[in-house]
Length: 285
Image (cartoon, rainbow, N blue to C red; front, side, top):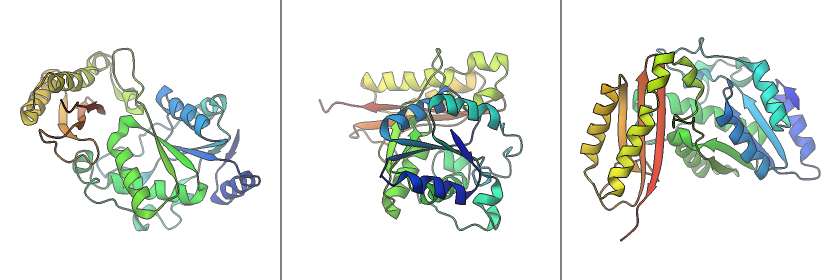
């Protein structure tokens, strides 16, 4: 695996792969890698001839109240995992390489509506930061495909909308959520959980699963199911941001006639903000 830290070196390497043409797959990350990230690499290996992974802790994704400086940076360990997973090129730039004029004055990409609901309501500007850095990576790497995890479902939809609206010639692949044995979605932020909190963390998944089962059983009062879900989380010691039943295509509030649903939740447990979602397709019968 080759590691580069500059845009010029990245472009030079990728250009060599285009003669003869090879399909390039990109997996953007912020590092602190776990098995969920490595599942994205496996998807990329199947979809492309060459795999590029990026590690960049993007300051635009953090609000003033969030701990950008405290985010775990484990580049050496991450590079070893990526090498073993078969990545061809690791792009690990410093902030000034991505934002040469500073991240506060950068030209930004913003996806309306999708970026301001749910997690966007509680993390203002977060998805603008995501869209901006992913657009820059798409321009630098010019991948044929890019892989994102379904665990960050709202992010996945934001990227898909950006690709459509800005005509990026990139196919977006959604990789299934990877879970621990108790159902907890794998996340870098799980490392913030204390031992006692980790034992309760799967309640988020259990809560969303209970809502899914209730809907499959015929219940359609989504507001009541959301309220019950928030109460269940509070009783388990969580501080919920939201529990929501939405249309899976655009995350707008779901109605009784909608057949494809996303059941989403975000909640704090100690220092860790956990997110999760389940997809549900209802029959027309």
